[in-house]
Amino acid sequence: MTGLNMLAGWTTVGDMIMIEQMPIFGGYTGGVEETAICDVATTLGSFACFSGNFHLDGPIHIRWGVTTARETLQVAAWAAAAVDANTDLLLANQYYPMAGPCTEMCLLETAAQAITDTASGRELLSGSAAAKGVVQDKTTGMEARIMGNAAVATCGMKISDVNEILNKIVPSYEAHFTDAPAGKTFQECYDVKTVKPTQEYLDIYDKAVATLRDAGLDIKH
Image (tube, rainbow, N blue to C red; front, side, top):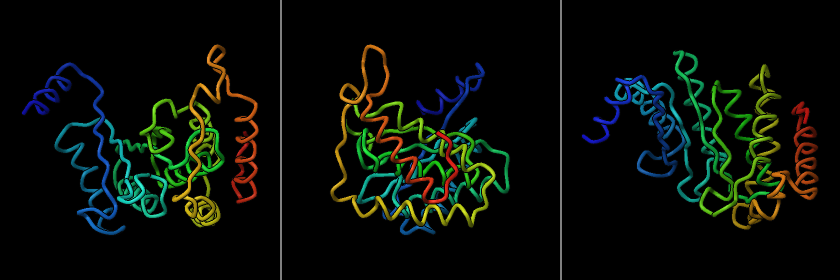
């Protein structure tokens, strides 16, 4: 009841309401198809039952605890594409890559999800929480930068072309889920006084961009 009372109050005063829900692939809902159905249902429920203005998704892999696994990307893509094709609802997704900041793997994971979300019709991207979002100070603006730039580069692309790109990127990092690089903290890969990334991180970013271009994504920066 407390939650419903809060929602009633927010609605009355005209607040923007975000409803967050993260279906677990491999959990009670089962496999990819079943989890996608659950995702669609809870997405619609967030608007119909809770008067949400937009829905924040984030399918999570039960073993890896990430949103960037092959299966969770499929769930997110199918759910968003289905809802986007039949409604005008605002859809968002949150990002939990396995690797930590200042690593190419983290940037490629983030880019892969941004490509997936953009191609499947999501309007808002919420990320990125590197190192699965569970390690203090391991989130930086560079992950958000590649998220945004990869999304822009994906706009207007054919789904078949997007799938070809993802089929090159995803295998490059999913094989390292068991030994993903821990990366560095914000303080280690940024100048905390100027809030600018270190040259090391800029070089790693450029390497990730080159990898994406080689995969077929026309990313500019």
